[in-house]
Image 1 (cartoon, rainbow, N blue to C red):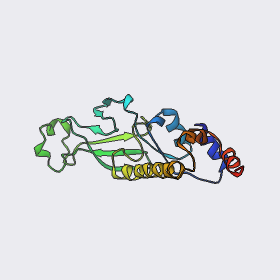
Image 2 (image 1 turned 90 degrees about the vertical axis):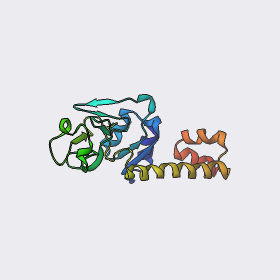
Image 3 (image 1 turned 45 degrees about the horizontal axis):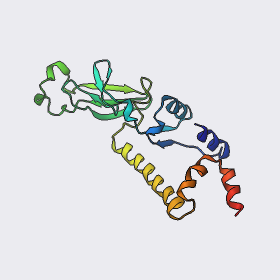
Image 4 (image 1 turned 135 degrees about the vertical axis):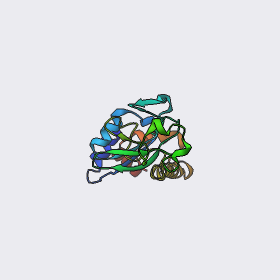
Length: 182
């Protein structure tokens, strides 16, 4: 992530708490870099890397949500920030008698509980669960920013569309010199 290194070099005083990126950035090295700098990654999963994964006794879908033995998605039930794990609970815990797998699943009246840990797979098991309200709210900001940048650069002719890539590849200082030359 050369752009991130350049950003840190140009603005060392800025602290980032989250990175909102599209699926083109869905790579373990990018997650590792962001986590090392205490930046929470919000990155769309690349659909080419999809499929059900197995984590011990529970399957996990493409969004990192555990699937119970009845084939239903478990419900997010909080997080243990100190242990960096997310708690998932059986979606039938309020009506266990309606589940045909109740006896196989868990004898506890609390219902089946499963934890996903970031250390197991920080790409799949993010601090804020994918698909949650908090995830959707954060990701809405990314699309809003993309629309705003497009509006400024293309619609207001600040930068014609065919020059957009050129300006995105230049460091900030080079862009600043280019505009002060006009």
